[in-house]
Amino acid sequence: MNLALKAYEISLSGDLMRDIEAFFKLHNDGETLQHTLKVAAEARKVAGLYDVDPAKAEQAGLLHDISNVIPVSSMLETAKQLSIDILEEELKYERILHQKLSRAMAEAIFNITDKDILSAIECHTTLKPDAALLDKVLFISDKISWELPGDHAYLLEIREQVYNRHLDKGVLIYLDSIWEQRSKLKLVHSWLVQAREQLITVQQTIKFIDEELQQTLKDYAPWFDLNSDVLRYTPRTGWSLEQILEHVTLTSHFLLILIRKGKSKAKELALKANLDQALLNYHYNLGELDEIAKHKSFEWIRPEHMEPRGEKTIAEIKDLLEAQINECRAILKEILGGEGVLYKTTMTVNNLGKIDVYQYIYFLCQHAKRHLVQMQGVKEEFDRLNGAK
Ligand SMILES: [Fe+2]
Ligand SMILES: [Fe+2]
Image (cartoon, rainbow, N blue to C red; front, top):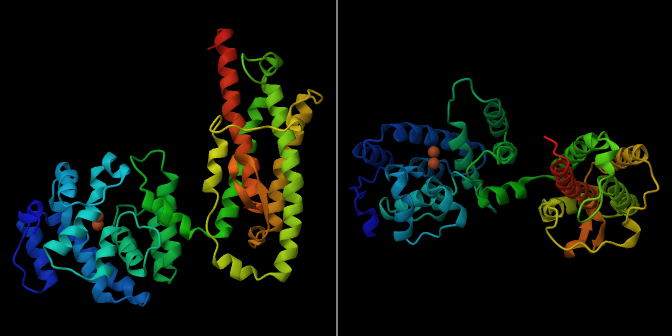
């Protein structure tokens, strides 16, 4: 046995339940033992609903948190000594390593060789891409076995989905709840991000784009209400706010021509092609467009026809932007069934290659977001020069 784990060695009776109890008692960790027994029972129960071996699920549950006996301050060092593959983000938050450490301990101390069990232990906190059923069973059992005071609404929802044989839906509710809190969290593990993207359905993608469109409209509204001194102020480099606003509508105008055409083609294709088959292979694909929203994240060669000309009033630009966003939302409603994935057009910006109709609409939204960041910069420059608050 690796020296790093020598201190945790115990003699085995052959009965895992007994050995686990002895193990936690030896290390004075009654709290983890209580949690462990609950998770093991839950995993056994959930496994039965999904044609997963309940005995394996129970064993995985019993072993999943055994590394809790290692002090958090030693987790990184122990992982290094065990030559565990450590991801960059795990250096920022050592505690996350406990899932991989538990796997190593299950092998070394409890002689577990079953690959399915080891896999489930290794990803019980974050899940991972291409997760197996047992991985998901342990993952979700670890979450729903908690009885938090005034139970969180989403836990009740997860239990309901899981017990009604919608394991993926239950798992996704949890992953989404983490994703939504991401700005407040120390870490969102890349395994969790990838696992979540694999479970997202095209309907959820559509809903997400629609929310982003509404948000963009809200974020733009206050800019049109600024007084004309600010709106017409020419910054040291680049356009005035008014010019930026006009440019956004010009770009959206040209994107919309392609989006309308794409939508019609996609609907035609849906009549001939097998949409169900295409959706079976659907994989969330908006992530690659997130770069677009970051101002100056890449060199954008802008065609001349998207240069602002100053021919519209600010009120006209406002109405146009609103109409464009609303048209995007209306187009989404026409292809709610996932038809939009059937038709792809080349997008040369940032070497995106061929993108589907939903991605095109999201692109329009991301482009608008990109200029919000730019406008913020111009406004700050104006305020500085004019001694405003
Ligand atoms: Fe854990
Ligand atoms: Fe746990």
